[in-house]
Length: 209
Image 1 (cartoon, helix red, strand yellow):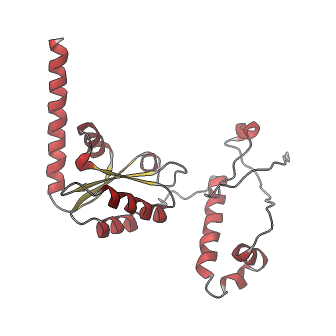
Image 2 (image 1 turned 120 degrees about the vertical axis):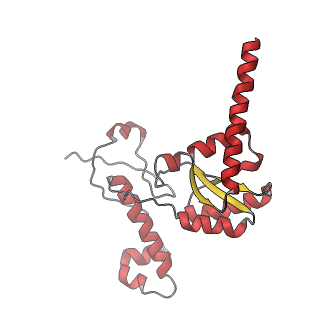
Image 3 (image 1 turned 45 degrees about the vertical axis):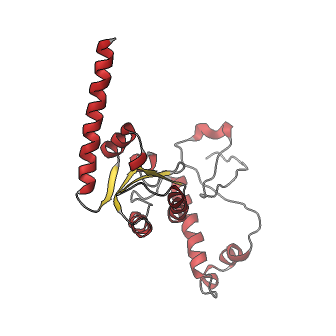
C-alpha cells in the first residue's frame, strides 16, 4: 500500500476534498488517518472522553448530532453510505402544511430526487400547488425554515404562477409527495390540456410558415 500525505479542507457537510492532482484516485479505497487542529468545546470533550461528554449537562443532543455528521461523512468516503433517503420527508410535509393554508399538493423534483435524497450538493426543489397564488415572502421564509430540516438549500416553486411548460414538467416528472383533495387532480388535467393546446397552436404556426 502506498502512503500519500496530503492537506485537504473539510466542507460543512463533512466531505474531505482531494487536491486536483489526486482526483484520478476516484473509485479506489484508502485508509485515512486524520490530523486536525486542536478541538474545542463539545468536540474536545468527545475527543478526550466520549462517554463523559455524552453524560454532560445539556450537551448530549449536540454531541450526538456531531457524531452523526462524522459517521455520515465517513460512510460517504468509504462508499458505505446507506441507501435509505436522508431527507426527512414527513417533517418537510408537516411543516409546509402547517405554514401554507389552502395547500393542495406538494411535488419534489431535481437532482436530489432523481439521483437519491443523499446526493451531496445542489438544492432540494419542491413545487407547491395552492388554491390561490402564494405569498412570495411567505414562500421565501418557509424555504429558509425547510433548509434547517434538510441541511441544504430548498427552492420552492408556486405552480399557480408558473408557465405551462414548467407546470407540465412538474406534474409529469416530479414525485407527488402529498395531495389534499381532487382539486389537485383537476389542475393536473388542466395543465395537460393546456400543454396539448400549446403544441397544436405551435404546429399551426409552423405549417403556416
